[in-house]
Amino acid sequence: MNPPRTVPDELDAVVVGAGFSGLYLLHRLRQAGFSVKVFDSAGDVGGTWYWNRYPGARCDIPTTDYTYGFDPQLEAAWTWSEKYATQPEILGYLRFVADRYDLRRDIEFSTGITAASWDAAGKRWNLTTDRGEQLRCRHYIMASGCLSLPKSPDIIGAGLYTGEVYSTSRWPHEGVDFTGKRVAVIGTGSSGIQSIPLIAEQASQLTVFQRTPNFSIPAHNGPAPADRLRPTQRKPYGVPRSRSRAYGGIARCTVAMSFPDRPRVREAHRCGNLRTAPPAATA
Image (cartoon, rainbow, N blue to C red; front, side):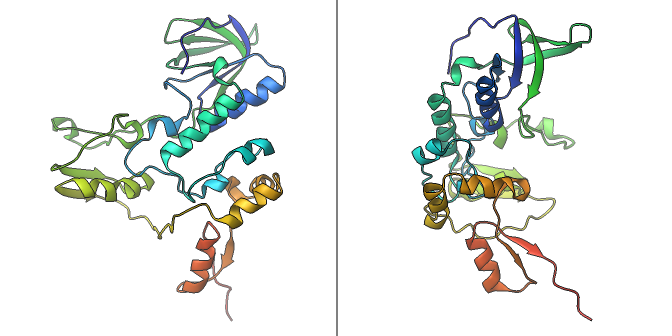
């Protein structure tokens, strides 16, 4: 974390968000010779991994695919402990990256951009922070991601409830003790699937409200697979290049099959991700 500093009146670029994309943008823009500042309302780097601290929070794709690929020395300096790393380890990785490339000196934490207007004549953005600072920039870049704002349930009467209410995307940093309490969880997306088993270990009663079931298969989590780490260690750019050619940036093992084809499902899942192709048409 850093103390407030004086921000220059004019910059080449302003980036909003200090998560994965914001940190990389800062690094690359610096390399290109631009003057740049990053603003984030959080108290440190991490983006969604700074805020999402709910029980069981972890990556739901192999963390060997959830890394930067621009520097082979960085890849050699960091080894993931699990196939699906937990939130503390992912946050630790981003802090490690921020320290390694001295990124914090150009990040304003606990600071948000409250107003932005385009000056067509001057070809500059006019920005205002929640601290009352005024600044101008040529390029205004949003790296806030799609998970930066929590969504409260739009349920009639929800405001009448006077008990404790928590959101997985804004979990208290000090944690929550559910021992002996009756708990209701709304939703079974990734955060629900991850948090429900751990909350159930503490709560005296747990009720889950689900609109749409998700398809979930066993994670078979454990140490990061050696066959996934080996390409990174021997050929540092091999894994990033395969990710750059993959849909969504995630290296996948694609197997054409029709259910039930359990042995091939297990093999595809062992590779790290599962995609199914429709069975071939028959005459």
